[in-house]
Amino acid sequence: MTTSYDAIVIGAGHNGLVTACYLAKAGKQVLVLERYHEVGGAAITEEIHPGFRVSVASYSCSLLSTKVIEELRLSEYGFAVYPKSPSYFMPFPDGEYIFLNASSREETKQQIARFSERDAKAYDAWEDFWDRSCDIIEPTLHQPPPTMGELAQRFEEAGLADDFRRVMLLSTTDLLNEFFESEYVKAVMAPQSLIGTAGGPMTPGTPYVWLFHAIGRAIGKRGVWGYVRGGMGGITQALAKAGRDLGVTIRTSHRLPKCWWKMGRHAVWCSKMARRYAAALCSRMPTRSAPSSSCALLAPCPPTSANTLSATTAVLARCTS
Ligand SMILES: Cc1cc2nc3c(=O)[nH]c(=O)nc-3n(C[C@H](O)[C@H](O)[C@H](O)COP(=O)(O)OP(=O)(O)OC[C@H]3O[C@@H](n4cnc5c(N)ncnc54)[C@H](O)[C@@H]3O)c2cc1C
Image (cartoon, rainbow, N blue to C red; front, side, top):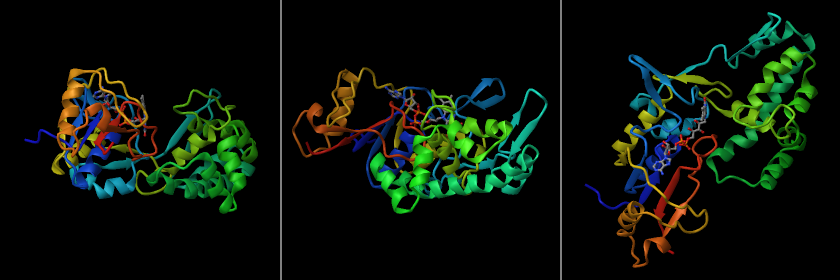
């Protein structure tokens, strides 16, 4: 059994597990420590009543990268996703309603035309705008995050400076007003800009959140979201299986307590257990320096999906200090 590691990943959410898998693929000895009794983090399926297994936190998938799914062969480990159809339904107090279908622009336009012919036509321009913006942002998901200035430059070089203004600077209300006239249509579009934010439709910058809902590819098709077979735990169980096959050691019910993470060059260790793990890491190092001066905290993890990275997922790796 391995007693020393090249990298210790703290937290077995999907980001930690993907990171562990890629490190293992690169030939590293990897240990994943998870405080809960099960892997998954917020992408987890649990039995909440005998016989009823549900996604207890996150519930739908799109942003898990196709590249990651393929490279880690997640389908072979049980991962499967069913596209949401319709993708969105909004009922209104007056009995009206709208269905959106991300897989069919024509169906969505027909729904919108019930409220405004003009908006149905504008929907083409709306979708084209998001497609153009996604074309710029999507490649960055597999790159070190660009600065805001670099991002602006990419839009500008593509002749899309006005799209940058729309995505980054406008509020959702302002953006929707540029495209649509019907309050029903604007109401059905707005929530995707606001999920997971502490903002409202008038908060500048919220269209960027819309972009992330437009960018995912649940079934390989941009903008389509889906339900994972077996709930969201289907993702992390597949990742854990893939990881174990790659040689990753996963220990659940293992909390790494009282570590104080310095987000700079060094991790500072504050607990006996942390020191023990640090010693395991450092036993592989060609250096005699103390763990606190020779283990770097690489944080945050490499982005593996467009999701916000959890502050609790961290990778400790050996380094030369
Ligand atoms: C209620 C809710 C609904 C959401 N819905 C969606 C959705 O439908 N679709 C979507 O794409 N995204 C959704 N999200 C966002 C998405 O779930 C998260 O962005 C994603 O799970 C983050 O993954 P992660 O691996 O970075 O962190 P997490 O999933 O948070 O995993 C971190 C792990 O670290 C462990 N940990 C923490 N501290 C320690 C420690 N000291 N020692 C050991 N282990 C530790 C935790 O137990 C946890 O398992 C939702 C989030 C929430 C909270």
